[in-house]
Picture 1 (cartoon, rainbow, N blue to C red):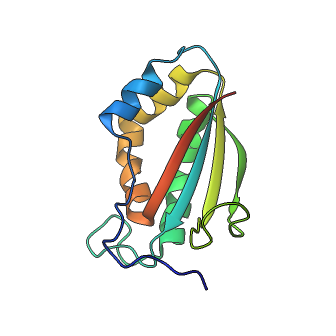
Picture 2: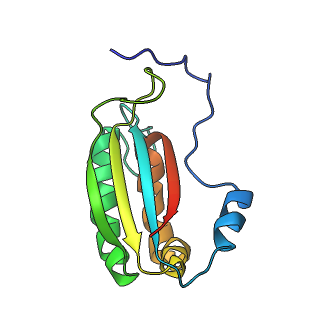
Length: 140
């Protein structure tokens, strides 16, 4: 079993900072982009959240079900989605439960998706599901 830092020992990252968003927005909006998501689920979602009492994995499954049609509307294509199997290179105590890789033919499609009101209504499912996350953008 992996050693995990005590609760509160690290800051969960579930959303980009304004500086990170601005840096990404500084790239060519017409260029293709591949978004790599590393996701760590909560054991059980918080009481009162949209996913009250579900496991993090169940809540994320509901998030993906709800957002699937939206990604299609904004030309997002899932390249890979699957559970993590452990660290091969990197800190041995680091664990990611799930990896999601989505390719957009143009960066502007990603920004259109995350700023769309329909996505904003689905986003709380993602937040409820996650203990921590990383999102990397690659030219694609």
